[in-house]
Length: 438
Image 1 (tube, rainbow, N blue to C red):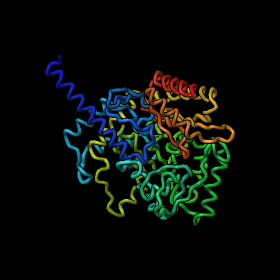
Image 2: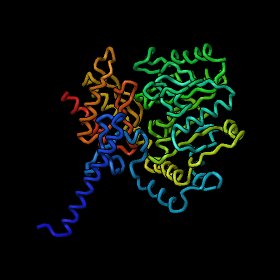
Image 3: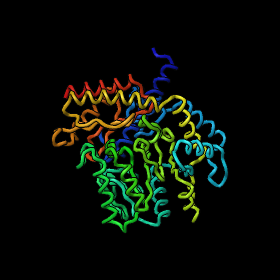
């Protein structure tokens, strides 16, 4: 017979299981209209590159909370920094000085080139991009912004205008943004010829504006858009065109920043340009709500015309986490790891492309990789149903990946930067196994 202690423990476990099941049912019911079946997973714990569901089953996380978990889930150094700061003071507002905020701002600015030395903290990437766009307009006195088709920069009033996918745009007033042809080497009209795409930006300025613009905003690698690398030579060309029109160059590093691309700390560095404003979020805090805008003292001075503040942006707890992230990336050589493991994984995925007609393209840098599925390589027909099947079967085998792109047919592989070669092998082997059975 079961003793009283064992019976009590069993009853507690049963109640916990029922509660977790109820929570899962409620979540799935609440978000049924926006969640696809592959997201029917209730994660309750995380450790480095692994996630665990309510039953204790482990999953290899190759999505990283949408390119957000940079150092690893619940990284001990970052958790320790958060706990220690929380025990001292959680919130001070910008009315008072706090060394945690100042120390991180200084450390963050030191990672950027040129005169990018002034840091404004926000709570998210959307907020960071909203602030950057406003600063560009104030500094130049112009209202016209140029962004790229297929881009995603946020879902607030200004950033939704800069976003250029109908999937993410609500029917509200969005003015003053011109969307240039996307320099997509795989699906674009001019292939990998960056200079030809850049001419469209000049045409937009000549025929769609007064000849002067506030700025140009873009991601070095489009994340939500399906891990699209910009055609070689494009950014350097556009940089010069925009500067001649009096505009500022805004680099959106929300997803590509913080060593994710491996070869560089920031995505824009691989294009040989220095932005006027850099926005960041996601990996900056390893999952803590934190974003930032970094610019020059001259541009930053426009905010002194009125009173600008952000109540929660850059509170001591979040900035302590951000500072810890920088230290962990350096201490554990995560940029080098992203480069080595990412290069290896890309090779494995490219080998699968040679094996399966379903894979139309493999692209990206470091641990920001994309695998586009198509039913016809010549026509590049999006494999919308097939990607859902592969994704679901990979989940059943313990591997979580994301998907994106306008057609929803691109695997987004953006794991924590502590991902190992063994993890890369398992991901590739599972994808291989699933596709072999189709």
